[in-house]
Amino acid sequence: MSTGARALGDAVHRLLGGLPVENPPAEALALRDGFLESSLGREMAAARRVEREFDFLFHFEGTLLRGIIDLWFADAGGVTLVDYKTGRSIGDSLFAAYTDQLRFYALALEALTGRLPRRACLYLLHQGRTVEVALGEETRARCRAVLGEWKRAQEEDEWPPRPGVPCEWCSFEGGACPGRALLDPL
Image 1 (cartoon, rainbow, N blue to C red):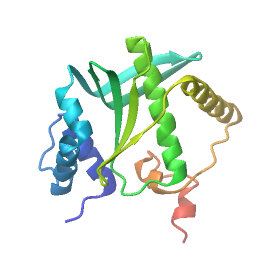
Image 2 (image 1 turned 90 degrees about the vertical axis):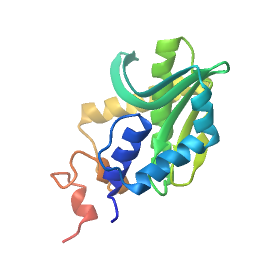
Image 3 (image 1 turned 120 degrees about the vertical axis):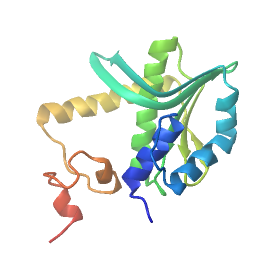
Image 4 (image 1 turned 30 degrees about the vertical axis):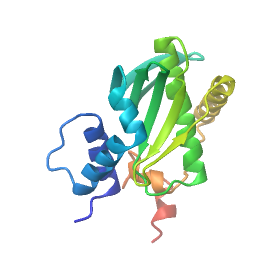
């Protein structure tokens, strides 16, 4: 039996977060095990501090931001930030959004620890691959630009629909989103 992408993603994130999952799908267990056996998973296992499903709230440029970091861990070399992705493939626009997401997470960790993480990684579970996301001077500037885009869209009430794979995760799924018609033509 095939598991829906959303249910699979939820199960994998719960398993990797150390949370209970009733009757987890075999695919979710395999993806979890693949991460734990990866070099990044082994680094996490050896770390002196490990935080999973880390809920944060912080101010950035006068805006209160909230999120949940899948994983971060600290070892002698510093902090490593990890965001798991269960999608089988990631297009360029989605990859850019995930990169921006990690940069905001990095700033949240900087607010907590006093410095940016030494590494930020997307871990592509189906591919068993780690993609490093550069952090540095450009991190704050990029987050400032993204936040400016969000504020402009809010002020102008301009949220154009961008139908695609991320729609599966949206709270409007099956509902009133005008982009839905672009996905499901009559």
